[in-house]
Image 1 (tube, helix red, strand yellow):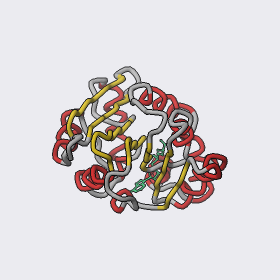
Image 2 (image 1 turned 90 degrees about the vertical axis):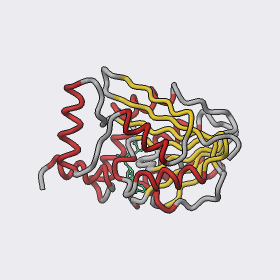
Image 3 (image 1 turned 45 degrees about the vertical axis):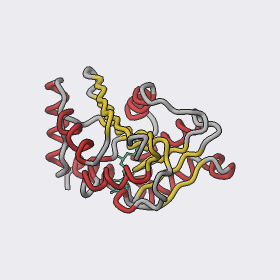
Length: 216
Ligand SMILES: C[S@@+](CC[C@H](N)C(=O)[O-])C[C@H]1O[C@@H](n2cnc3c(N)ncnc32)[C@H](O)[C@@H]1O
């Protein structure tokens, strides 16, 4: 297996010592910059109840806890290494009851319907087994009027150089990447409305937002 294949496997499901280093790295650097950029476009009330799917090293849970100071941030991930790292990174807020992290797949979310004001996924959706069905499952646990926000670095954007780079990684890792129209179609099929797509074309970042209608 090449180093690049190993890296994609760690992004897919972090494991072992390398996995710990990998996701700690994602809490910083370029991924952190992308998350901060996206959070600038996501409205978070101080009492928001939030779920971060594929929480990895837990850096984004920590970031959102600082905004939702009177709310609560949950994280789920199917990797044991991601769960243990997220728990360490958010130890104080877990003790205070402001954060809860659960071991779970996106396809089987352990929450009641209509629970969350906001559900995020940062660099997470590439590895979901059945995208439209998984988006439907997320829709169920969103509150009416709640928002889904997916932020990605790898996508088919207008910046040709970055698109080619993303296509190269998707081939190596055997996962699909998409363009803005496809994202719109997936969210529409899963029932979301008010779909908004924001791109940072120089960096190659995309934020996809959709809402659960208030009367659902
Ligand atoms: C590339 S990492 C991103 C981590 C974090 N969101 C960040 O931005 O630093 C993707 C994470 O999603 C998790 N993941 C991938 N597929 C998943 C699934 N089907 N269910 C739950 N978690 C999943 C992986 O275990 C990994 O921790």
